[in-house]
Amino acid sequence: MTTSDQPNRFSIIRSWCWLLACLSLLAASQQFALALQRASAPSDKSNAIDRQSIPTPRFIVDVNQAPANELEALPNVGSTLAARIVEYRRTQGPFRELDDLLQVHGVGERTLHQLRPMLTLHVVDEVTSP
Image: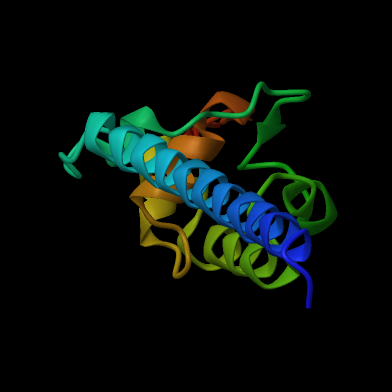
């Protein structure tokens, strides 16, 4: 090994050290940015439902008249939940208000909150005969 090889080897080692230092600094800055983002996010979970984005309704579904296939077109409503809604409506009668959907197994506050802009209900009052 000649003396001219040593400065060259030192230069390569120094370059690798700088590269590692830069990569470490980049990773640390990303972690810092992520920590800042988490810290600035609201931690109160009581209003978590209100903060979630609600999809813009593309259509309105009447929960008292819609068949199961129309209910399935709603977000977060699969075939099982649609069948439960139809069955509840068949056995318990029409829904009087949208909050009555909470009585259907599988419909919670969050689901109802997300679906509310896409739902309507037409309540038919029963007419009693004299």
